Image (cartoon, rainbow, N blue to C red):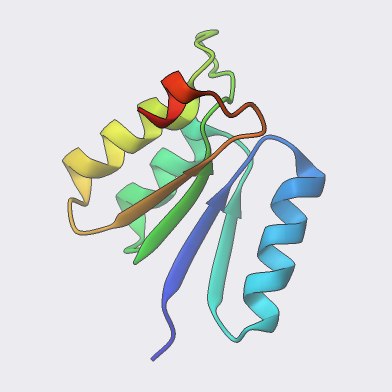
Length: 95
């Protein structure tokens, strides 16, 4: 059985690269372009892993939509692993 993975990024190019790579590896991959869309998918589908951008703007204007999505996933699907990625790495972000 293949792992079910959700890739979330508001940058189409980054999202497509990650999805293509994982799909070519034989994994079952779905995509979402926003934290809100990803939240809806998590409500209706069981994922083993969610890979999400940390810095996505939400519909409410919040700038760390990936962190908000992480909180939502851990409440609704606590066994789902979450990997946060960012193009703006800092020591504070890592901590």
